[in-house]
Length: 149
Image (cartoon, rainbow, N blue to C red; front, top):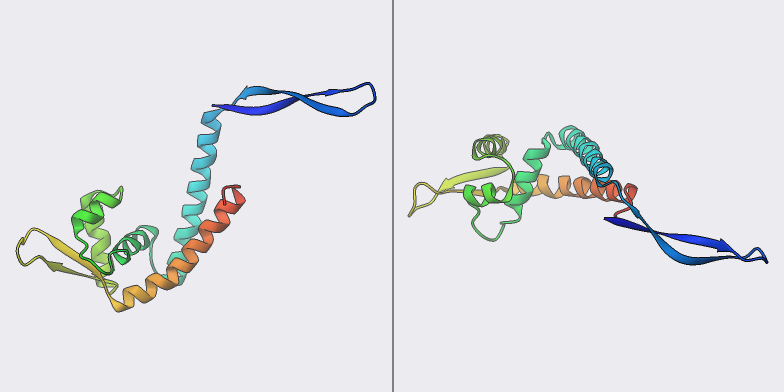
């Protein structure tokens, strides 16, 4: 990856003009560390805020957000496994916490007892809507600070 900078020259009258781009290599490792730092600091702030205001961990919010996206159709545990980097076991634990909090409900499929549906409850939709405003606001702030908004 190359970053374009420009070589400058000054005329005898003292005015500066751009002559040609100079290509300098970009330290991709340093950029990766910056990205990781942005992710880690943003995730920590999201976790802290969601926990304080909604008693939700970041993983719980992210699963609730995925389930909320299926409001008009059936969401299965398989759908969630495919959409998150969590293991099936970790995802099951997160869904169980959301069920206990009354934010989602589980049900079995009538024609395939192995399939589990997950649906958002009315309380879950309310909590999700409130938490989403804060979540999105914190992400916008992080992206703006990183110059990516």
